[in-house]
Length: 172
Ligand code: APR
Image (cartoon, rainbow, N blue to C red; front, side, top):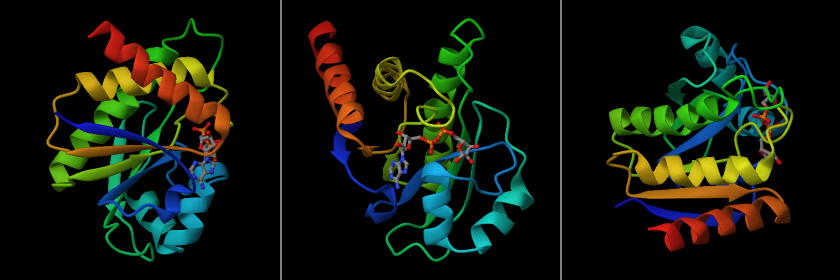
């Protein structure tokens, strides 16, 4: 059973095997959490991302973590859906980001993985619904990852993630 932890902070400070970045399809870097991770990992991350990309929304691809401090060894780049009102399979694409990232982590032998709140920034996905999708998908995806840390960057996101965890427990 994968343990899920909710924390608030900067994902580039996480001490895990792999951190997930909310990328764009080019995997060349951008703003937001992607920008923070690219700054921390250094310019080789964009070169490695460009070499494996482009990445379809809902898919995930791994590169080394370069200048990020150990134990981080991998960056898993996933591309969230741009929110267009909810009628364009955005929820399924977001769920796929979490599912595919765990599958990629399994392939890497990663045991601990940190996720940001994918798609809830620039891409505009409603954060409360995104939190429920994140927790439900991680709970329902078979994986050898032992510990998932969901990293909130603001109070509201942390509250939504905590509520999603509680709601899931009541349902189980
Ligand atoms: N650590 C953890 N979370 C962070 C950090 C950080 N250092 N910086 C930002 N976040 C949070 C945001 O507050 C938001 O909750 O990450 C979440 C995702 O927001 P974005 O980074 O805007 O990602 P997204 O909405 O998926 O948009 C992706 O933005 O930066 C570009 O290249 C990226 O085109 C892509 C798009």
